[in-house]
Length: 202
Image (cartoon, rainbow, N blue to C red; front, side, top):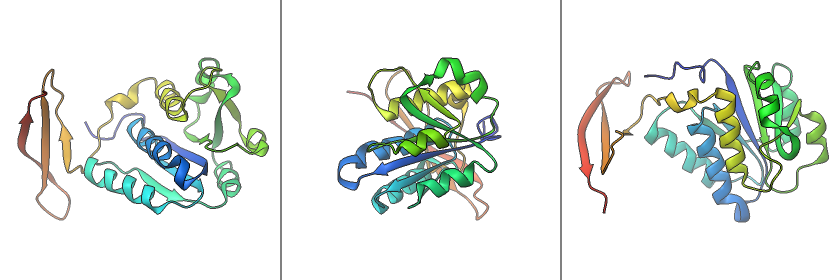
């Protein structure tokens, strides 16, 4: 199953605002990995530039496959305004409208920028967004909010997504761990499954 589900017929980007290298490194990394795993095409980091996160996520994509992108943008305002020329913007905040109420409208959009904050979100973001959306009105993690948002937006289809050109893949197993190493056999990146590596859980 290649990337041919409804996740690939859409352009879904995530904008991470206000990243702070010392304080937010772990959470921002998890936001990027969640965006990738749950069907987004790209994450844009704003705030303090952090090449370590960019390199980490780039290496994950190389190892685990897919076409997910990560980049840094100093001017978050420009990114939002540029995207709004051809798409719509959803800002995740627990002050917004409930996700379950706006999800049907959101799903009509094929080009969507999802904005998530780290430090205090500028007031202007609330005005620039086409939707201010809450994943419950309770305090919790932006990682959880992003995952639930994408899951609702794709109606669970993102769980069927596969990631081509991976170096390794996991074979689901009721017990133990089964890892498939992928061997690239030519420059066109034709893939051939290697020997399964099986280990047992302790």
